[in-house]
Each structure stands twice: as structure tokens, then as C-alpha cells.
Amino acid sequence: QVQLVESGGGLVQPGGSLRLSCAASGFTFSSYVMGWYRQAPGKERELVASITSAGRRTNYAGSVKGRFTISRDNAKNTMDLQMNNLKSEDTAVYYCNAVVATFSWGQGTQVTVSS
Image (cartoon, rainbow, N blue to C red; front, side):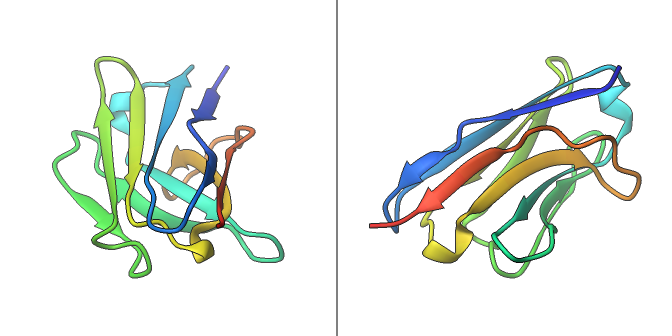
């Protein structure tokens, strides 16, 4: 049974940082391109960062490029998202999942950027 468990969200002031973590189980994690998605209130879910199966290449949405860094540890079946210089528009529920063919979604982790 596939499980994706996100953690690390919270309330942070603009300009602050957070590090999100994703723990994956139930599938061969190292075989999948993985990504971090987010969904803000009233908006569709969007892919903000992705990383290839071996972690050699990453890709970012323009809105987060230069501020977010995605990484993975295939030995531990985990993936992280380091978020720096956070802005109010980064407020959303963040999810991890495969890219292209997604699994069932986890509960996500709430990130709120507010002063």
C-alpha cells in the first residue's frame, strides 16, 4: 500500500525558511521522478519542484526558482523541500507525489507565510 507522509509545515514570517519532508513507502521510490506540489485556497494544485529518480536533475516552477531546493535520499525513501525567502503567496498545503502518474495523495502539510 502506497503511503506518502508530508511533514515540516508551519507558520513563518515573510522572508523566513521552512524545510518540508516526505516519507514514502509501498513502492519502489528510487524508480520514480518525484515532485512537490502545492494547493492554495481556491486554486488548483500545482507542481512546484521535481527531481529525477536518481536525483541528478531538478526542475522548478518560475515562482519558486532560486528560493526552493528539492532533494531526495533513495536509501531512506525520503524527499525534502528547503524553502527560503518565503512569501505570502507561498501559503498553501504542500504535497509530495510522483510526477506524471501520481499515487493517492497524502494529507499534505500546511505552510502559512504571514506576519
